[in-house]
Image 1 (cartoon, one colour):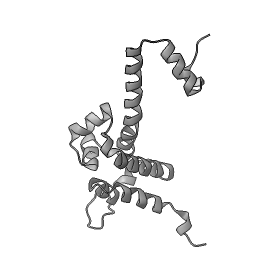
Image 2 (cartoon, one colour):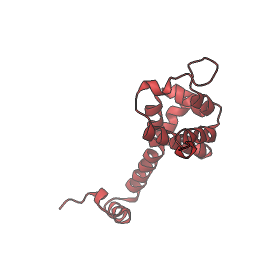
Image 3 (tube, one colour):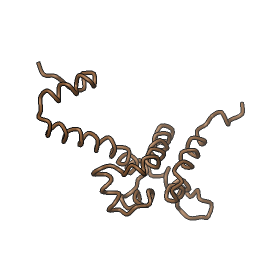
Image 4 (cartoon, one colour):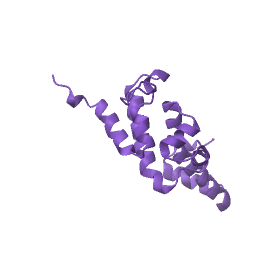
Length: 145
């Protein structure tokens, strides 16, 4: 009978992998899992915000090349809070908004430019403010009966 790791509790799956592989392979496997876990929120953010790697780099205050490296090896630890805030904001937007290019191109900055306020705030390193504003947009407690 074939064992599907995803059908096992994580501790049993880990024991099965370790028992069936040498230590070097196991380390490479764990490194790859770690890379994918850290890169997934970035890949999702790029996809759902409709950004290029250059645009995502601007969002995080780094070059396109640096952001591309983040996709390959994960963001540096000192950027974890920024990534987590924007990933959480992305989750809220995805849960409440219809997908499509129109939702991210509305001029909301107040200066007539076609740059969304949320993107501007993110590019200024104000990721907590982005998350707070996104949460406030969908806080139904603000609505009076």
